[in-house]
Length: 416
Ligand SMILES: *Cc1c(COP(=O)(O)O)cnc(C)c1O
Ligand SMILES: [Zn+2]
Image 1 (cartoon, protein in one colour):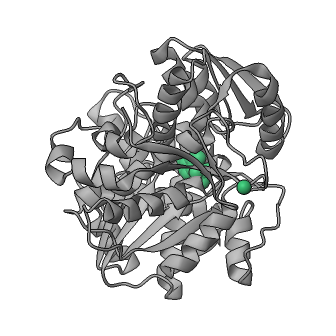
Image 2: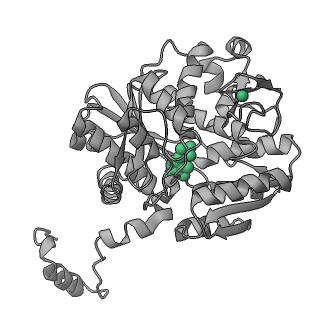
Image 3: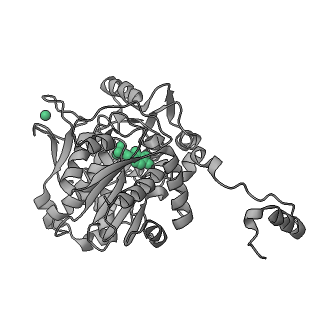
């Protein structure tokens, strides 16, 4: 059983029953899942959630699935880490990092796919598919393996090795397309119409997108049932950004929270920043770009939810910024050396944007700030390999170690 009422067009408000569709047939607006919040309010409580599993499925009352058994790799309820070292460096009063690097396929995409795969099975699909910037390919392949489904995953052919291997290991049919993500996505939209497959981010996108709300719920629960005052979130399509906001606000609707205090800030890489660019220009009209950045997981030039992300920034008195590829690398290294978390390029974008937003005064130094770190650095080693120290290379003798130390003037102060 679920509390879903159906789907509703975000533009014209037309209602649809639960089906594997994602655009309104009248106005082509995107469809979104609607719920019976009154019924949820009667049944849900903080105690009930606390007794649930230590995964994203502790919030299943707020997710659009009705099956008893969900496709679950143990995703979610990831650590919310108090980051005092990084806070001190950046000049923030109270900073937390939501560490989604540690999900089963090493990114937050496991959240959306866990919901999408469960829903695809409910609809009777046998094949799970996606157009991916990388992490989604890994998550779809892993969940299809667990669910015993076929998998077809389409990625741009210039993807990082860690994401190719990180998807291929689960034995999907992996298709590398000579083109940008936006071209891969267009191809997959055509395929979704004729293939009879569940493309998680196309024909079952309304359900898929709901999985990201759990990144809102978890932070609120882990902060002791309050929202952060400021949140910094990386933006590709803009779905994650809008759904974290939806998640915070739903907790008010179902009576688990009094109010949402959060200002929502979006982080993009300069080579793929249509949302941050529109924000800076004070417009809600996005101009698509040909994306080019080392933050490949965020390289979407024509973001489907970009307009709604801008609306969230307006409603929450937030903002957005874009950072250079050099700042992305610095962000990854700063996060690693200050907090011991190795994030992928999207994490570098988030940390660099956090730094920039504090410096510009857009982010306040006071209050509680949460930065969402959404993917694991072992998948994007190419980005940092030329920016880290080579190991000391020695023979297995004390003398060799001492000689090597002496040869390295930068280690002169080290005494053993
Ligand atoms: C996909 C992705 C995002 C952003 O997702 P959208 O919902 O498309 O904005 C952020 N971080 C990582 C690591 C991702 O893989
Ligand atoms: Zn419509």
